[in-house]
Amino acid sequence: MIDFGTLRKYYNLCHPGEYLKADDKRYVPLDELGQDDERKRVRGENWSGKLVKMVRLSDKPVCQLLTGLPGSGKSTELRRVALGLKTESKLLPVVIDAEEVVDLASPIDVPDILLAILYHAEREVLLAEGKDPEDAGKDSILTRIGGIWSSLQVEAKGSNELTVPVVGKLGIEMKYQPDVRKRVRKAVESHIKTFLDEARRELSLLNARACKRGHEGLVIVFDSMEKLRGTSTNYQEVLESAEQIFHGGAPHLQLPVPVFYTVPIELISRRRIENVEIMPMIKLKTRAGDEFEPGFEAARQIITRRIPLEVLSEVLEPSKLEERLHALIEWSGGYPRELVRMLQRLLEAEKHPLSDQAFPPRAQPDRRRVPGQHRRQHVSVAGAHRGGQGALAGGRRAPSNRRQAALEQRHPALPQRLRLVRRPPRGSQAPRRAAGDREAPARPRSPGGMNVG
Image (cartoon, rainbow, N blue to C red):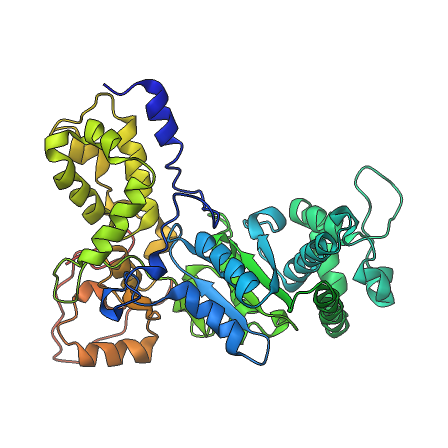
């Protein structure tokens, strides 16, 4: 019988929404597994190593968009990328969590992102200089652009007097006060070129200050923007705002220093979004449908670094431990967050070890209840979620319409559920059939519109 204290300890080591720091003992270096044999790569490639190498090779500052399913490990790996660039290239990383600086339930704009970058970059430089990071942003760029400041009337919270807008404070007010956000955007819109030039000049100065402290420069990691979702009433408006600023390589967000932005995975199906690197899932199946042993072993490490085998045997029953661990990994589809979530469900069970009747219903996820926003993606994303058989397995990018056609031509036996599902826009009528055409029988669909047959 497992005591309550033990259950609580391991339960709290299995939070599905928690990202792991680089030195966390639970971290499994998935990109390093199978590095001696390319055929045994559990993600098909060294994803984080590729991003590090991208920055190191390029003579010009990299501006790279990244995405992946929520919980696939982006935040954890991006912090590994930042650490790799710090140790290998002596760059000073500036890691920004969008949840802390941006209202992810509302449309976003360029000033929201650039002001946050300036503030956090200066904080890191001040720390490198041995100074107080709380001094960051006091010399606001808005005060140096007379036209912006004269048209920007932002009142200090709790005060009737107009104050000089400290970038850090202004960013917080922009997140929580829609009226302030609207005024700043309107003011910047009238001076967008001046604002962009001044912001880039400021970053160049910060980059030079970092170099004086022994670094090779700055590198920006703007994480958690993939969580930009909006609400049920403004979902499309929020996504369209993201599309506007990230389309065509995000020209307004290109900086004089290397920068990585995560973006909502919904954007990969929009033609205007280019050059997006997608984080693959753990590969559990080959294209022939056989089990991919290195992937199962990697998933097993994710489990055992959170809950040791001796505790798992008491939870799952010693005689059925291996069988049930294998089933858990299969059910996860190579999706790290789902695997960790199922571990918590096992520990929540009323009695341990679990009986045959208690094991499947509590552990096996119901894939039909995938959140609606994820069903709206290419169906190939769902293929990756099911164990690496889809277009995202092995580090491939989600196909555009032309790439999808080429993929189907090369692989005519590709399952129908991995193909792109097209639906007419709302309010439009289905195309008329030519005379003599037979009507195709209706295919069964899940509630989100995904072919399930």
